[in-house]
Structure formats: structure tokens, C-alpha cells
Length: 130
Image (cartoon, helix red, strand yellow):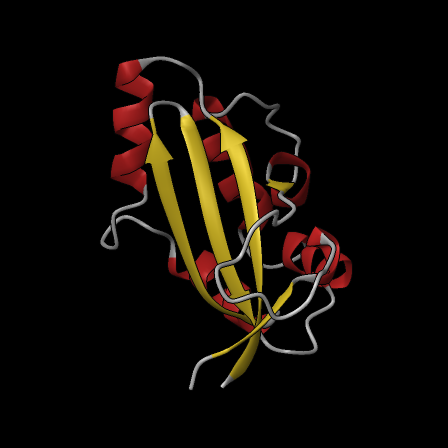
């Protein structure tokens, strides 16, 4: 299966109680179904978020023809997306008006054990699962 991978990062407020609350709102039973549905509708196949202290790292796998900029604009217009972004902004080093695309910073890949090709973060990293 071919797909594109995007890696992003974001900083949370450096407050243990806020970090714990952020973990809580991301538990499967607490995530808003409209947010998950909107991500799927724009071509996001899978997403994982990892945390170390107050640093988040996201891995986002998408359809092969994913246009990052267009998809993020479309996602921002999905039901409850602006409400979700305002809600989680209290945990993040950002403003309540910022969109997901304005908060999460794309990261460039600098190493790959089995290199496929060089690519810019905005273009995604072509991947294939055999």
C-alpha cells in the first residue's frame, strides 16, 4: 500500500497538570468523532501522536496524492474543527484562533535507514507497506 507520511511537532505549556489533561482529552473515549471523521475525509489514513515532556511529535499517514496545504484548509472548515482547536489551545503554546496547520510545524526528514528518495516536508515522504 502506497501512502505519504508527514511528521509534525508542537509544544505544550510546560505545566504537568495541563500535560496530563491534554493526554486525557486524547484518549479514544474522549476524542470528538467529528474531528476523526474530518481527518479521514481529507485523506488522512492514520495518525499517531507521541509525547516527551511538553514536546509532541505527530506521524500522519495520508493517501498518495495528498495535497498538504489544500487538505489543511479543507480540514479547518470541517464541523467542530475550529471549536476543537480553540479547546485544545489552552494546553498548547499557541493562540485559541490558530488552526491545526498553524500550530503543528512540519519537520524535514534528515535520515532514513532504507532511503527511498529525498523529499521536502511539505511534499510528504512517499512510503510503501509491502
